Image (cartoon, rainbow, N blue to C red):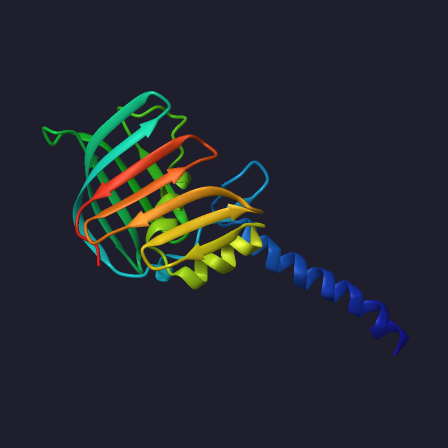
Length: 184
């Protein structure tokens, strides 16, 4: 019996560290300097998407406009980025818990996991986001057409959704996206 009680703590430690290592193997981003957000599985998407999007982005004093074809469902996400003439500017994929991003135009410092995280914050299931953000030490507010991610009382990210437009503003990092297409 004493051997069992000596062995039990080791089993508990192994169990909890193995659960944590599964989570650690998932891609993640830092939504704040100290908040690690693990990307959610693809099946947490609210509605399937297979449509053209006009993307307007700003970072500091630079503005970008590009076109994107986005296909997202429970199996993953594919995004093809194009200029006004239809030339390929990059491709992003999130499948089976893995992110792939390649672009002949965008700098290598643009990390695909951050684009996927922003997409998830806009289009994934609110209850799944709330749980994942709470695990990151952040809170999540969702009123249906407006989402906010907060660290304490500070609004880190704001998202406004309408039938045809989604706008994400990252107050901490100083960038914004506007996606124009069809949304429910």
